[in-house]
Each structure stands twice: as structure tokens, then as C-alpha cells.
Length: 245
Image (tube, rainbow, N blue to C red):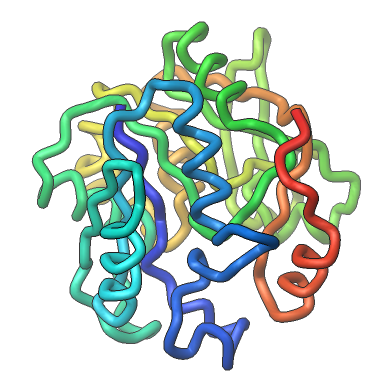
């Protein structure tokens, strides 16, 4: 299994911290955001390579970090240098697949979140289901739902649909940016792009995939902390205690 880390964004809402430095390498406590994620994932023993998809501006920072790391990490430079020319998450995934000739099961994660639970729960869930999978959490606030990827579920955790930023949410289930794709579904990503899948948000790929494959959705056993701006970063630094379960 490969783990693809989406890290090609420019984090403009965190300026000046991220004007010349990538958000995933910011420190939370004694570790970078990426180290919290990767050190945890590696305990499951399923992943044999970690692939960080970066933009051209920040690739040297990731390469320096990867070179000093104990895990097998490959940095892929998508060639973009500005927020206006970014490829978008879905195109970045396909770029890495083509550049590295990947044909594996894939865990795809955003590189700018920390969790208080282990992602090994999600990996084991996906292995048990034998399908591509997402996670979900309950969101009571309708306003937040309209800014999120909202999932509609069928029997047995089957993911029926996912809609990004819906004006009228069909449920209270939000989908965070952590996904598992079977190899046979990862091969369909180029078809999704050709079919007009919105490429900026990774949830849009899930929305397309629901119509072309069977996916399951695991309820998160804890919380995630999305570092979106300076205020949220300071909050996470002050309150995050690491993985609890």
C-alpha cells in the first residue's frame, strides 16, 4: 500500500508563517504535523512507501525533511509555483500516479490535519470491508455542513453519495480528507478527471467514485483538528495532546 499525502497547497490563510514554508511541516508540540500522521500510520505495518505531493516552491523543504526521516518517503514536485496555478488535489493525485507508475492500494490524506485517534482503525476497517473507504463524523451545525463534504449513507455503512459544500445538506455526516482507494478504483481517477470531476477538492473524487464503485464510510472514533488559519493553529498548539486511542 502507498500513502499519498496532499501537500501542494499554499496555505495563504496562514501567512506570514507559510509564505515561504509549507504548512504540513509546522510544529504542533514536539512534532511536525506530518510526523504526527506518518508515525501513527506506520504502526499498522500496511504502508511500504509515503509519497508527499508538493508544489515546486516548497519541494526543497519536503526533500530536506524526507532525507532526514526514518521512513521511506518520496517527494513529488507537481511543478506549480503559485496558488493561482495549482493543479488541484485530484490532478495532483493523478500526477503522482503517472510520474511514479503507481498501481497499488492507496491511503490518501491531507497533510494539514492532526487527529486524536489512530488512523490504524481506518486502515483495518478498509481491509475488513475490502472496498474503497472514507471516514465520517457528525456535524450538528448546518452552516458548517454547507462548507464541507456531506455524505449520504445506505445500509451497512455504504456510501451512497457525497456532495461538496451543499446548499441543502442531505445529512449531518461530514467527510474529512482521509481516503482509502483500492488499486482498481485508483485506476479510475483519470476517467473521473476526463468525465469532468471537479479537481480542486479531493471530496469531489469521492462523489464521482460513489457512482462507479462501492465505498464504505467509517465513523471516526475521535476528533480531527483542521489547521486552516493562524487562530486555529494557535488553538491546536495550545490544546492538542496527541493520539489518545
